[in-house]
Amino acid sequence: MNEMHRPARLDPKDRVAMISGANRGIGLAIARRLYEDGYNLSLGARDTDALAAATARMEDRRVLRHAFDATRREDAARWAEATAAQFGRIDIVINNAGISGRFAFDALDEDVLDNMWEVNVKAPYRVISAALPHLRACGEGRIVNVVSLAGMRQLTSSAAYTISKFAAMGLTHSARHYLFEDGIRVTALCPGDTDTDMTVHSPRPNEEKTQPEDLAEIVSHVIALPNTASIATVPVNCIAEAFL
Image (cartoon, rainbow, N blue to C red; front, side, top):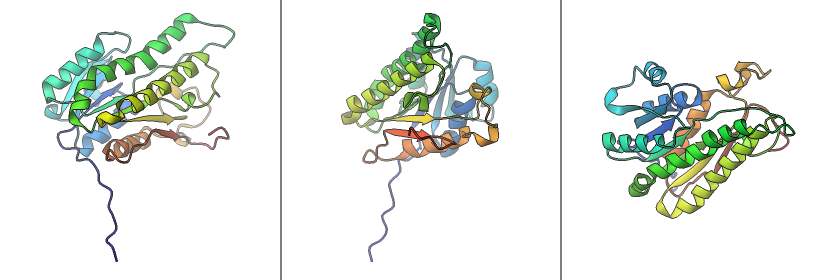
């Protein structure tokens, strides 16, 4: 009887993960899980004081805490440069930072739309571009874009959010195809209603929503898979939907 094959997993030792929006919610849950896994972390957030407080128990030698404002074009390059300077490599990019905003489709608000576009689409693109030489160099680079189920179907009342998340999905799959031969694997993580401060107005009780720690578990699994087991899209929800 043949011995059962055990799937290979990439060793997290010495691998470096950049995580945006890491001071709270999904980003913080991912940071905590990957730290427990053994990765070195480069954490980006606008509120660096909140980031320092949330990650105070993490060893400084394994964690870089850096200012990252998704609306500032220069921040992505500065963050990536600081990460490479401290650790000598970048293996993983997790674009988690995002914002929501609302207006009715027949009441276009260009300022809201521009802000959604800047934070949810252009900023992840800039972070990927800044880290790309290092992702290519390691031969097993990983990119996870935290998109949303709003990037897979239209159910929300926010035209701006839906438009930006469909664009973020386009960015993810463009990167997946363009970078595949470089050994870089790209995944769109698409959560539905999740227990974070972005869903405080949801009528669903928090205990019935997807928990950030559950999404962190998925990220931990996806980035550890070998190049031969790429996962393109992971839709996650706490309810059954007819449109998925």
